[in-house]
Length: 258
Ligand SMILES: Cc1cc(N2CCCCCC2)n2ncc(-c3ccc(F)cc3)c2n1
Image (cartoon, rainbow, N blue to C red):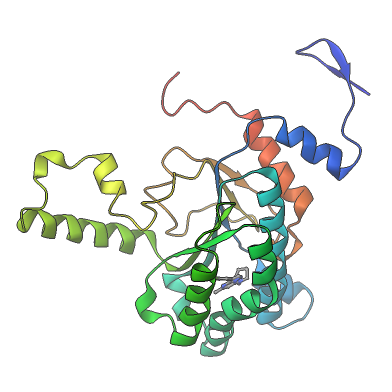
């Protein structure tokens, strides 16, 4: 039992995970959660395993957190799976990573469909191997009519490239008379981004103790609450996810106001 100083009443800490989930569901649920899934290589190194073992373990955590996010009623979950900078990694690691979407979908797509999850993707498709895109596009098509959680994978995504592409598109539309300069607003600009059909993230989670954005959703994260945890992504679990949501629920967001 512990004494709740605000409501002057005895309340009991939730004992089971189900009770904890119910308590979280009784408060504000972030509509859009974005996750930078960091620490996979370090997790493997700590176990004297190859880096790709960390990526494979991290893939299983994606499914775990997706299922819980869907159960909590979160509307969109954006997972930063591959950045435009990741091409600099060794070819063997990049080749492995480009096979992960297929492996993930082969194992988990039936369950995602059954749970009414809708798969989407943001990122530059031009450099992604055809076999990877085929698997992702099939999942997008197979889930296009679902209206549950949107599972949005950031794949070969870079925010500065996204912003530059939007600027060029706007310049072109001004040149061809589609829009006039006076009409350029934050809302119009947002509609030129890859995330145009999504609300800005309410909560960003980054694992492994790194405290930086790594060229991720720089425009969209303007008013997002950040939760940085030292936990390595392969060790991240439902309890850690609930911790992050509870942290979010304890913060009152002012969007620049008082
Ligand atoms: C490149 C990459 C890396 C990747 N990792 C596992 C999670 C930790 C971070 C890096 C490694 N995961 N995990 C799931 C996907 C995925 C992507 C698209 C899709 F439609 C379905 C699944 C994925 N893609």
